[in-house]
Amino acid sequence: MSLADRVTSLTVRLRRIYGDRADEALRAMEAEFADLSAAPTDEAGPRWNERDVVLITYADQLRSDEGAQSPLVALREWLVENGLEKVLSTVHLLPFCPYSSDDGFSVIDYLAVDPDSGTWEDIAALGEPFELMFDLVLNHISQHSEWYAAYKRGESPYDRFFIEADPALDYTQVTRPRSLPLLTAVETSRGPRHVWTTFSDDQIDLNYGEPLVLARMLRILVEYAMRGARIVRLDAITYLWKRLGTTCVHLPETHEVVKLMRDVLAAYSPQTLVLTETNVPHVENISYFGQLDPRTGEADEAHMVYQFSLPPLLLEAFLSGDATALRDWLTNLDPPPPGCTFFNFTASHDGVGVRPLEGLVSDERLAAMVEAVKRRGAIVNTRRQADGSDSPYELCVAYFSALSPETLDEELHLRRFLSSQAVMLALRGMPAVYFHSLVGTPNDIAGAESSGIARRINRRKYERGELDELLREGTLQRRVFEGYRDLLAKRIDEPAFHPDADQRVIQSGSALLAFERKQHDAERSVLVAVNVTDDSFDFELPPPYHSSRDLITGDRSAGGQIVLQGGQCVWLTPS
Image (tube, rainbow, N blue to C red; front, top):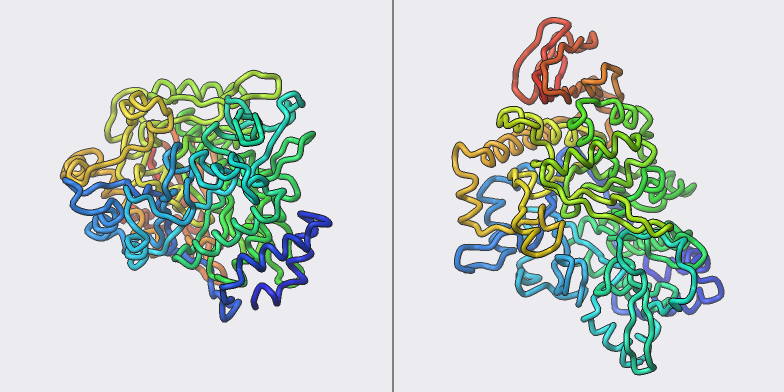
């Protein structure tokens, strides 16, 4: 079905966004897509299975010694040489376009590859052993982009591409993700102006109130799909639509834009999935699944949403030795609506967000967690509140370092970290593994201090020879890597870990988190149990698991009880 064939449904969607300007918006879309042919079918087949695991990485994460290859080629070579194409289905390339700041998230040209990382041909080559996931940085664009330069020169249509604002007005209701000014002064051919800058003065917010902006970004979305993106991550989608007098987050127009993006992909690339990045409290986060569509029986917005409450809750459980908050959250966690799934992770290029803990842990437990990660080298980024005060927004720390014990104990550290990853891998949804978690990278204090960028503590880039030396036989990083690779191999062979398989939390003491995954219409099940304390714990097994085997270690049990070491996780199957 082509765009023209979808005019009626698109017009309804556009009318909700633009009102009387809906026809103008449709004409802009038709012009942007005039040279494209629609996909031959809407049938995309199964969207995911238990073999789906995503690797999150920068395009320039690895550099070959003496620059003999582009970083993208070096990355592909390293992944394949280490057999990771056997255990990872998809590689998420963080923004790889030319950029001016924020390690890629201030894009200069959406349709170019940063020559310091490689070429489109290199990305296509990476897409041979792996499927691909791209970022669409759609809330803002770099001040060094041609679009913004044309805006400053007063050239049409770019003079309408950015949000001009009066600094004398009241912006206190606007939700702020940073402790930085919301507006930035700029000199234009029409005199001084102030433009909206949610994240920094180098990241200029786009004006989606202008239909042509939306049409352009929809075309870029489809271009990414046609260049191999199985998943497109909608970066900072929360803040897309602005209306003074509101919080300017999660506005109805923003949700309609996400639904429109899904509709457009259904026409041109029905196999491509939409993932929304909304680092906010859980109830707000899952609102991006949308509503059930009576025509399909599926939700009509994002195919996947990040499980943003998982990283801080899991970390807090290990640091406090109390799994209660994590267990209560999982107990009350409704399954995703039909046609949707969670995107599970513990670490990414960003820090560990703490807003998703709102309503899930007490202020006292949050404060204790913040202090605990500070002792482990974390840097705390803040955001500006409506009253002008600053509060913690994210904990910039390597997840591996965040899980270090209070006293030096390499075995406990290794067990705690791999167990945290085993829990994430086993939960309902599609798991995503950050490169630095895969290889056990500790805090890069020097990188954060030398750059003045707190998030660089968890964004270390490697020379190939340097990484190989760190992963030499016997090192702690090597043990993390081998242990993680082994977990992945066992995870993808277990049907009970299908993203849609049932999940049931088992009540236990505060020291333990236990839940069961069960394959639909089959007897296959796995009991996942993790001891979040540093001491051994006697676990009374439910009757089906009195005789069981641990998929992780291969050990068998023949009684109604097992002993879990401090920080240990098991994946038990009845035997």
